[in-house]
Length: 185
Image (tube, rainbow, N blue to C red; front, side, top):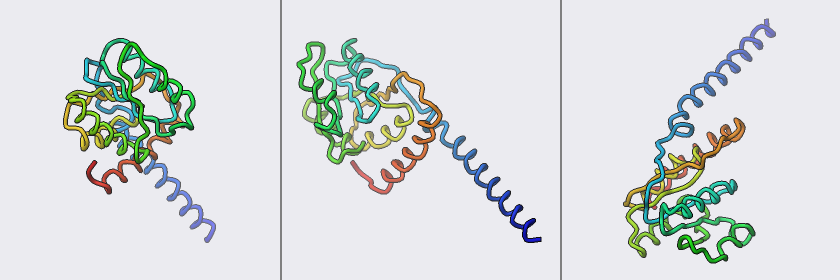
């Protein structure tokens, strides 16, 4: 009798976990997989959000070289610990004005604060933001608190493997919770 109860309890737990994962995956689709994205169009600046995937930087630099904006802003949350980006930021650029910074704090909120400061200082009214697709919605949520101009959210054109998507579901959800609990820019 105990073995039958244990099996039933185990099955209920497995079914509950599976249902939770299915609901979470479906709920996250419009936020992480299919967020509102924009096509590149002319802006005052291209703002590349920091992160471990360097393809975002290459894509943002490519957009700048194509003339989508006269300014490219690079968030380098790792500072000197990222030698590739540090070297790139130290190299003069003829195609656009390059601004590199280490956000304080080293989060999207810190990046939003720097965006607010630069936009106020430079008179920017439109900014193209480059990041990974699963980060688009949360980045928009945070940056809109810091910048009252036009934000164009442009994901890097890349396919992410399933384990990376799973990681971002959890990571971005935790980031949203933190952003809601810490209002303001």
